[in-house]
Length: 148
Image (cartoon, rainbow, N blue to C red; front, top):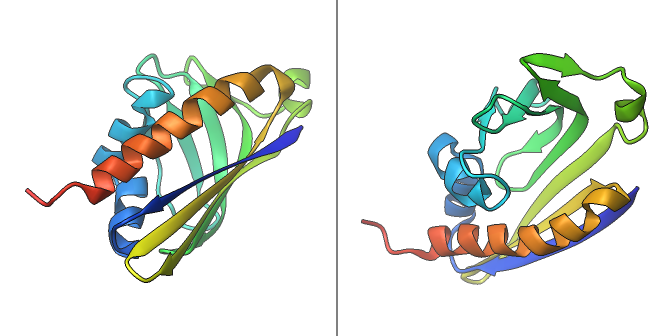
C-alpha cells in the first residue's frame, strides 16, 4: 500500500470548498472524473458508514473515521459493494483494507488549501495519479466560479 498526495489552492472560502467537496449534487460533478454518475449514500458524520457508488450500484463501502467540518475528513475504506452486497471479509478485501482517504483544508488570506492523502494498491496507483489532478481541477473551478 502506498499513500499518494494531491493538493489544490482554491480562491474561495473554507465553507464554499467544504460544501462543494461534500454536497450531494456537487460531489456528483467533481467525482465524475473517476466515474460518470458517481454518488454517495450516507452522511458525513464521524462513525457513520457510507457507500461510494457508480450508477450500476457497485462501488466501495467506508466509515467516516473523523469529520471536523471545514478542516479535516478521514474515510476508512472497508471493502467493496457488488450487487448491493457489501464485501468486507473476502481475501481480496483483506489484502488492502482498511485504506484511508484524508482531506485536510487550511486557509490563508483569500485562498483555501485542500490536501488529499489516499492509500492505494499498486494496481490503482497509475489511475489515481492520472485522475485525481483532474478531479481537483474540476472542484477548484466549481468553487471559484462566480455565484449564479
